[in-house]
Amino acid sequence: MPAPGPLLASGRWSDVYALDAHRVLRRCRDPAGRPEWEPDVMRLARDGGVPVPAVLDVDGADMVLERVDGPTMLADLQRHPWRGSRHARTLADLHERVHAVTAPPSLRTIGAPGDRLLHLDLHPANVLLADTGPVVIDWQGAARGAAATDLAQTYVLLVTSTVPGRTRERAVGRAGQGWFARLFRTAAGRTALEAALPAVAERRLADPSVRAEEVRRIHRLLRVRR
Image (cartoon, rainbow, N blue to C red; front, side, top):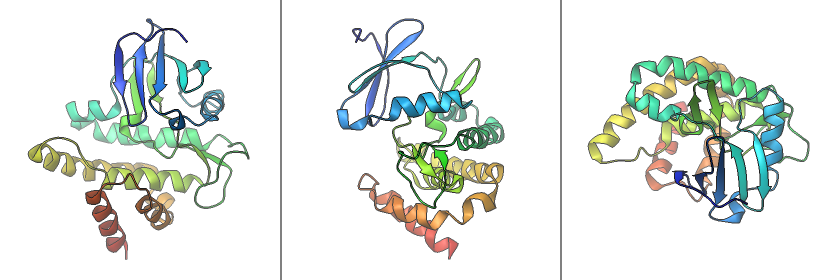
């Protein structure tokens, strides 16, 4: 693998370094953070018409990817909240494009039976807004199943995830979070995700990385639905 250049971004599992004007190195801090099948799923999605960075090389926990320049959808929403409706429609359209791809039988099945490709972490922080259009990143959680599971997963993440920052920033962020979640639910079709919500929320509760305040919000979401 080429030596990494400047650090461009950091996520829960990995760091992204510049290599040159056209390539980046995504290096997982824990090799277990990148499933062996992730490059193949990214290639499958890209071949199926989903905007995904091209996988150029793989070596253990490292991947050399096509460089995509542009802010995340989340960053753009924070700077330009009036674009919320447009971004919600874009996010729903990206889901539709992912779900148009048939997942390989070898991929784990999550939720209700189905053969659709699921991203399962497709929220505004995992969409880059390039000059050529939106690009979907971070495919470590991909699975096989019913499209409604993926839509419900995104809605639960939007409604219940912790907003970083100081107290005032979190309060403002929480208000915007709920607003955008409702926009996404409308764009995706409420009935399309409603039936899958309880199972998705319960599975989220079983995730040990979910914070205490997020657990409370998930329980509140389940109570409201009842």
